Amino acid sequence: MKTAKNKVESFVERMQGIRELSNKILKSPYRDGIFPEHCDIVIIGGGAMGSSIAYWLKQRAPNAITVTVIEKDPSYAEASTCLSVGGLRQQFSLEENIKMSLFGAEFLRNINQHLSVEGHDPPDVQFTPCGYLFLASEKGAQQLEENAKLQKKLGAKNELLTPVKLKQKFPWINTDGIALGCHGLENEGWFDPWSLLYAFKRKALSLGVEYIDGEAIGFEFKKMPDLLMDGMEPGSYEGVDKVLVRTESGEIRSVKFGIVIIAAGPYSAKVARMARIGTGDGMLSIPLPVEPRKRYVFCINCKNGPGLNTPLTIDPSGTYFRREGLAGNYICGRSPLPEEEPSVDNLDVDHDFFDKNIWPVLASRVPAFEAVKVKNAWGGYYEYNTYDENGIVGPHPYYINMYIATGFSGHGIQHAPAVGRGVMEMILDGGFETIDLTRMSFDRLIMDRPLIEENIV
Image 1 (cartoon, rainbow, N blue to C red):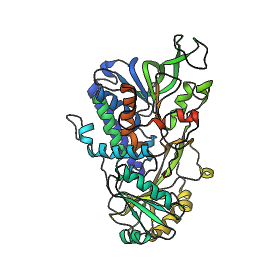
Image 2 (cartoon, rainbow, N blue to C red):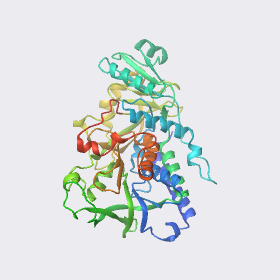
Image 3 (cartoon, rainbow, N blue to C red):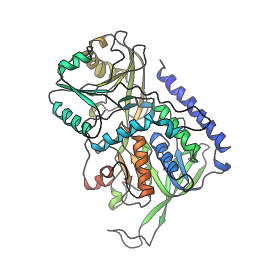
């Protein structure tokens, strides 16, 4: 079992490998040895979401467009991926999320067709198909049942379980306070998020995507007098056409673009403010409601704990756990209450949070967890959408050349394949062709139409 430190170090080594791969493909840090001062599309954020978008764009139009990705943390040591437990589920209450997860499962199942690179080992995300098990109290049972019906209608396979059936199927569980459970039977489980990010980035590089190791620190604005917009004086519109980048060496360079995509995870709002989003007038007065929230993941050992058939289990309290490997190890966590939100100044772990908020729930729900030992723990950042905890996908209503893909509040890694494809469709086809994500647009912030997901983990 890898420790939290080893987990990060292992990924840093893999990212160093991909940088070496990049240099091998490009023969230098940049393609043709030249800093990419202009491109058709620039993506700010090179994590799973940004790299997925880059892959889909170049896969669709390999020779027609140039794509550059700006990533400030090329080791991904503080990326949201670091926190992710790699869950994949269709147990959502919103149609869009269910459909994106169904496609995510299909994408992972056929990942070799999508992300293999000639001359390299095929991608392996180590998918473990043990399903999700949502547990509901009497208060939440009706909602869980309604969710299950919608999921089945859209093609997911699940099973509703009474307390008696829960005990028969999972004898290790204490069903006190549980009125109903829902177990995903297909296409649910967990995978290695590091490996998916690595595969996306490696494939994107092989298709010709340029990666800049640096931080976006501002935009340059351009008057566009011929563009008319409601509520604005003729000739007053200003657009964005350049992004300023501080490179790893500290040099300030600019990249001129035709289209910009903000996919910077928890730092997306910071990037948006550079474009006056949230500080301007009219449509620019509405901020991008995404901020970093620190979450903890704990790895525990329990010699007599649940066995191989253990699904990723979510208690009504929000506490979750899943098996990790075959040696009696489990990963667990829980989102804090609003008044418990920890500082995001660092990634230090509060071990008291486990003792006070997680362990009592685990021990109550699974009596075997009375005897556990915390082996490791780590912290990471969620890209938390403070408006409705759902992703924001699509064009910005003011900037005619800006798109957004952020705010997924914990399920971005599993939706990255579908969102990447959707953003590609918006740009190259002029609209969503496969999964309609229109309701997830920035416009819902202006019209105050939140998309509420009843099962957020």
